[in-house]
Amino acid sequence: MFGSDRPVCTLAATYGDVLAVAAELIAGIGPSDRAAVFGGTATRVYDL
Image (cartoon, rainbow, N blue to C red; front, side, top):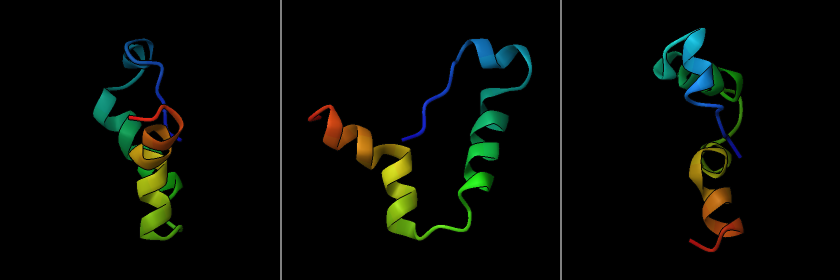
């Protein structure tokens, strides 16, 4: 599950840059796993 420390992270980079790095780090995993990282897990865990 992805989570940033925004707005603190924006002291060093834009939020878009932080998100791009996260996406780059998980580029090797499948689409369903990427979806889980960027929303699916939070939706399930927090019953959203």
